[in-house]
Length: 632
Image (tube, rainbow, N blue to C red; front, side):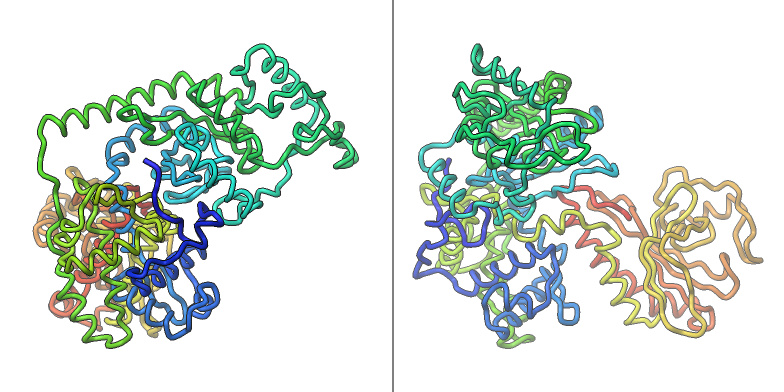
């Protein structure tokens, strides 16, 4: 269903008309300003100085300070000196959209399996007005790897999914696309892609391909060698500009030693309507280096109830596949994957229909109590209407894709009048749509911090919490992961004492004589307990005794190691668990044995350590709900 809201200024999909949309009288101005700050932080890759936000938003510095203070109180940003930094908890807004959408839960595993089988990057995308937005990325790690992130917005005409989504556009959507192209001739509103002014060069080999394509077009309009028709249905000679018929040979002089002439194609996206017609007939689409040289993609739509639910794409590089090769080699396998995805959606729909349940609503969020306490603590620096407005987004989720006003008010604990004003504001900005008094989130919600945060690693999530813990205890704090029978340090905050623990990130140590290692070994059904060498007189080297120690660690939830790795070194550690409860890392506090007794470590350090790890896990669970968080 087409969006019925005016686009928000500053978005890649806004048109000239949308940018001038009149703000509703009942809109919440602090919410509009707060979202503007979040968008500018997102565009700045997650971090900006407060003075930079003042300049980019046009807001007064005092207003920026109040907004960032409120967002920090909410846990959506972290204030680091004069900088504001997006925090992982902000991803709960995008998570609300992804949960309501259902597609990631149902299709992510299919996309991941396809990527593993083909050894190519695979993505899922949804339409966002006249752009496309990614909802899942299964990226292969290579020297030349895909840099797009979940939530990134791309212009439809420069992608493979774009023509497929455009097959369902009406006159209104095409008009909006033309307006946006005219208002933003270089795609500057899409920071995730290079400017449209970049020239694409073709040489003699490509000219031969073009001759074949032109000949094929004359006999069969659907037979496109590279999935694009640049002839626009005209009988033009090769070497002429395909839109105005002038020679391109003189546009760009031949480079010395090049061995072949080159010419410039029309502006990127000029053939989008033709590509859409081809996609409608073929049922698939190609991106032959429309975004940047070397990047090629093959896409097919995944349909639910006859409409395109999302588009799955296989993305590669020309060093591995040409666009035509990608189509010829991988299209049959992509068809199979799409069929499996559509079957998954049908089965899910059938299960939901067979056991109908009342539309679920979230439990009251305790927002009133929290906002009251925040207002009392921060005073006028806390903007209550901003906090309430953002909470409305989190009312949506799995089983709550569509909510009416009453349900939103119940889910958030807000008064109906307050919830209504927030919804009016979000609809004006394009983050919700309304139809028959029922509201839905739009893909634009993913533009609120999700792209830069979707690549955040566990070490990055933990870093501010490690720093805070070290400053509180005045001891060294570390994060480590288990690699075989060793631990590897991935995060570290040291103290400046004369006698302190000096270990660098990347250092590996045997797991069995360390507190970090023991809390991670304790989570394994069969921990490796071989080659237990005596590193100090106190090192436990008997496998049976160490197994008993690990059993106690598993039961108590922490490990304390006293001078088993090195004489004079004492350490206490607790595990870091992912959403499913599996231990993925550990955090410790290490000190010289003269600093605290073992009993003091348990009484004084352990509560602080557990509280810090609890905050790390809260951020990790939000960040890892719809993506795999890298451990390092």
